[in-house]
Image (cartoon, rainbow, N blue to C red; front, side):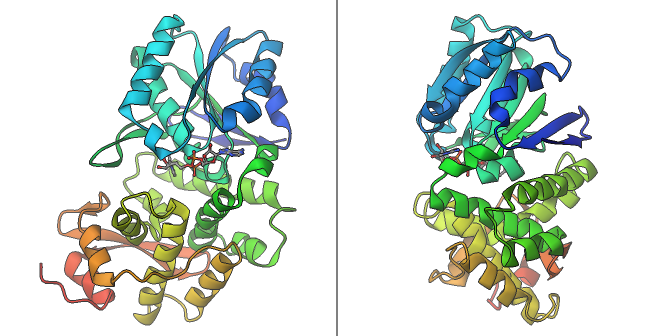
Length: 354
Ligand SMILES: NC(=O)c1ccc[n+]([C@@H]2O[C@H](COP(=O)([O-])OP(=O)(O)OC[C@H]3O[C@@H](n4cnc5c(N)ncnc54)[C@H](O)[C@@H]3O)[C@@H](O)[C@H]2O)c1
């Protein structure tokens, strides 16, 4: 088992290894808090697979564990599920001495993290991520949120976990699409920060190297979050491909395409344009495309660019008349460029009628 310390305002450890779920109780106890009760929060796909094992692991270390389960999917990252969770916690008389355990993908992690940030003005949360995306991205960095009708992640809080327990073994039960969606974000990490990681994914055997790949991503997320915990500077690099990706998701009303697929297309579109403008080394886009294709991820769209740009103007990453463009200069190196909306349209070779 590897341990990576995240030096956030409240530091915590990320434990990574295969089969470590069965040691969850001991690991939590090693974090230095006297804990007697926990509520394991999960969804109805992950629950039947891993909840019993998790509860047993906690019981073995003297922690009693209740279970709260909700329907899987983004639609559950909602106020109604959140309120049901708060009500369950009060019925179970959960106090600030107790903890929540988020067992699942990013939906479970974000919702449980937000509940932990707000219930009784804050109780501890342990993240046990079970998707590739959650192990490499959403469980680290302390961002939590729920969605509202007007947009995703619009109500949230920063809440650093007590610890993160990433059991690589749980990835074996992921379906192909969810695995590929995670790979899209991992390829993004390689593009923005690590040529070595990109080459490992592109040339190596991903299944054989999965633990190394997860830990490399955690180290990148660590470095970016430590430099910019509140998402006001370097952390924005993680948004490579996301402005256009979000526009694609909005075009499909967040139901017709997965986030990972939309980001994959977004990375290809923006990289092609910055390469044409001379900001990106020649051949980079081709390499990104060929790597994404290995995981059956889409690399283009039939949606007109002009239409997508309309959606970009409503993006929450926009600030006033400008937006932060993430440019991959070459595989493994990237920069944030503040550009006006007009400059963004010029780059995308579209007329701004603003
Ligand atoms: N907080 C952050 O910093 C951050 C960063 C990126 C994304 N996110 C959020 O993460 C969410 C997406 O997360 P996700 O991609 O993990 O989606 P998800 O949580 O919906 O999980 C995807 C699917 O996989 C299933 N699943 C999870 N683990 C499994 C396993 N081990 N075996 C079999 N099935 C399993 C789930 O039940 C679900 O159906 C979005 O809501 C996004 O906004 C948050």
